[in-house]
Image 1 (cartoon, one colour):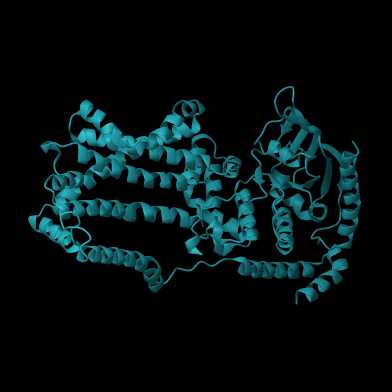
Image 2 (cartoon, each protein chain N blue to C red):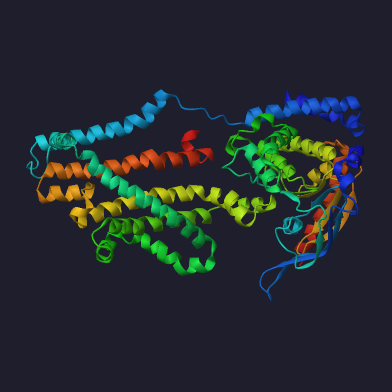
Length: 264
Length: 313
């Protein structure tokens, strides 16, 4: 935990007191007149170096919210401020480009960021070794396992050198053992880098395993229902008793939110 | 094994809550070992097929097919199903080929056509690619000429020969015009469908890492559309070659020189059935050869590098 204070984010954050600031953000889809409100008045700050999990059932608009913060879509109302520039974004699917090798995928992100040619290869190798895939530079995407693909995707996201990392259920499609390993990796990389992370999931234990703060969203329209600050020290394990206890409490709350929808 | 490790980990729960330096070091060791194990278990290794396998699976079947066709042909001739003026023997066709070789005009006949075909194809490539890009990305253009472009594919380009001859005279330019009208729609449509089939996730992922506008088209859209584009190129070549042969058969002029189509027509006029067969076989052979030399390897490379080729596994 002490690592986060000495990380680069803490030093370069400067005047901004947040890595992302959402001010009464609303989003509606559909034609005028027949609009469906997906997000309703979301106000949320992510502090520099903070790890926040957005938790919610289907239809709570958590992925929509992530797209708004990532600049892939515009809010219907309210403001979003991301002082560190374009955030990095990881999807549930690895979204690696199959026509490039693992290393070239990372180099493309470096190139688009403006890193000079001769620095790209060493930097890509460094990022691959950061996710413990040193030998995978020349591997094609289809030659990698699901967990390895998500690690390359993480390395590509880190290549953007953004202060804010957005993650949209990045481990949902992985088996339990691999997911466990990637939780440890993510925790390690986050605490070493001082990145701010906004992590979307519907998996309560995952949220409690990873986050410093869990934000529970209600569905249709998505609103912030409750927040928990988690001070169980890292590295946590998903089997830890404290993680399990808090997960039960949050799950109850989540079920309550879901039940409300069955009542009308 | 796994179960004992799990119980061990659960027993260590209190320790984890207040990690000491030692526990951290051990954790890191466990993690990298575990991760290496997972990676090794889940990685698919794709080896190269040995030469013997390649010969057996890729060379033997087509050779067998050719031998069977020749055998059936020879039997049909020997059994006297048809008189030799209508069905020449394989040997007579071979003799015709040897005669052309000895006369020294075999290669000039083939080259006249191949050179026209390839030049016309390259021109079609230069026109069809930007056309396809514009049709795929500009909704107004797509609505305006998209259906016409698809429709042109089903119009046999030989239908353009009379018009091309009247407009351009019986000259090489008429040949090229017919090739273009045959190949450009194929190439453009291939690119359009290639772009349409690009998964939206790639475009979103591209935007996230900063590939927008022209950089997005160059780094994401075009490479992602490559399989469809290559399929379009393949079909474009087939259409080029067909159109050219039709045009050569129909348009006759001493200025044009003798290509394969003209050679075939000359043989028909002389009622030389062995020559007609040789002409047909040469046209088929050139079409297959160009495809096998250029387009099939290109397609295989594109598909294999993306793991889309089932044969590689």
